Image 1: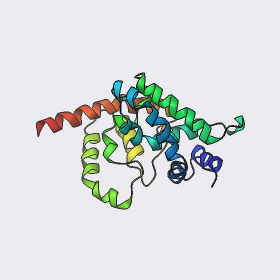
Image 2: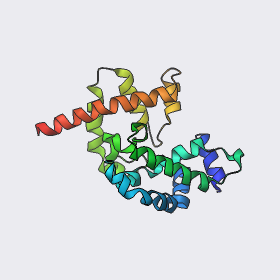
Image 3: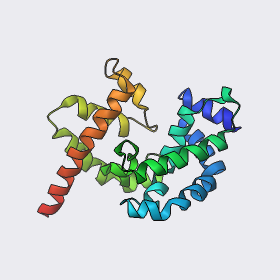
Image 4: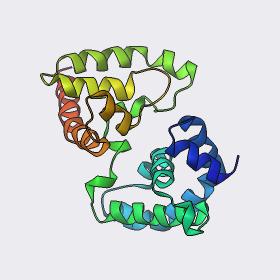
Length: 193
C-alpha cells in the first residue's frame, strides 16, 4: 500500500493499527534521523530521545490525521516537519505534546502481540481495579473504552460518540487531566509497598 492509502485508512478508522505499522516501517528511520538532531536540547529540557522513541506510533498517527494530500506534499516531507514540530514543542515544554509517556499504561503497548497480552494480564487486572475505584464513572468508561475494548485501540472521536456525542478533543482533554490522578494513585500505592 502507498503512504496515501495508509493515511486514508487511518483517517477513515479502517485497519488503523496495520496502517500505522506500515507507515512506521516505511518512515521509522526518518523519525529517528530528525529526532536525533534534537538529543541535546531534549535532554536539557528534561525530555529524552527515549520518550520520542516510545511515541513513534503516536507521532505517525497524529501526522496522518493532520496530513492533507491535496496540498501536493509527500507524506514523508510532511512527517519530517511534523517530527521537528513535535521535538520543538517537547523542548519548549508544551504539555500538549506529552501523551504516550504520560500514562501508567505505558507498559501496556497500544499495539500488543498475543504473547504480550497474556504477560500483562495481572497489570490489566490491577488497572481495572484502579479504574473501579474512581468516583467519576465517565472517566472510568473513557479509560475502559480506550484501553480495554477489544483488539483495537478506539480513537478519541469514537469514544466521544459512544459517550453521548462528546467531541474527541474533549475526551482527550479528560484523559490528559485524569491520567495525572491515576499516576498519583499508582505512585501512592507503590510507596505503601
